[in-house]
Image 1 (cartoon, rainbow, N blue to C red):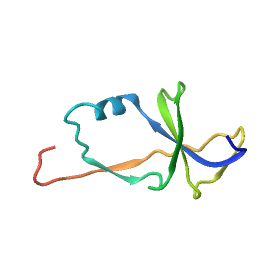
Image 2: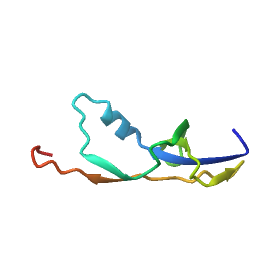
Image 3: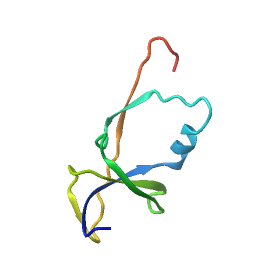
Length: 88
């Protein structure tokens, strides 16, 4: 990894990933605050202290992270989508 990269880490819980792989999964949520659409996925790892997976993304708008510095964490925010024609 370069000495200075523009990175963020996004936590992802395994129970959420498992749910999304089940037949019939249908999301009723929209991400309203997260990472830019053109952010580039770099890598992933498991963080035992947070007990979740971490996804690393690069984007020129992110602040530079020096070698050995803690990578900022972005926690996406979602809103529930209400569809008047479907039961939730």
